[in-house]
Image (tube, rainbow, N blue to C red; front, side, top):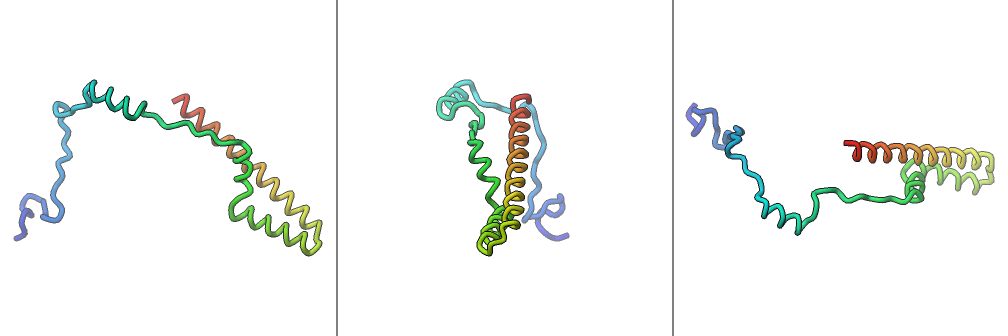
Amino acid sequence: MGGHGEEDGQSPMHPKLDLSFNPEERQGLTTDQVEELYKQWGFNELPEIKVSLWWLLFLQFTGTMPYMLELAAIVAVAVGDYADFGIILAMLCANGVLGFHEQLKAAESLVSHFYLS
């Protein structure tokens, strides 16, 4: 239609990519390159991250919802409404324990999937 390269389906702004794969052109690293990279970087693996259970429990009491419950508990004590304080504290503890339990289950699932794969 008059533009350069449009006759073959290419436009100057969007050249056609050659996505063909020729197995004969495939090359990997040489043994020397592999050994050098191994010396420089070590194994190709992710580091194991260990998190304290106490830290996981603490994290259950951070975030928007726990902060709102904590603030509500403080307000309840400030106005002397100890019944509401007890209910809010029970909700906060139940939320923390359930979240902690779910976090542990998720971590165990990831670890078992990682080591069984």
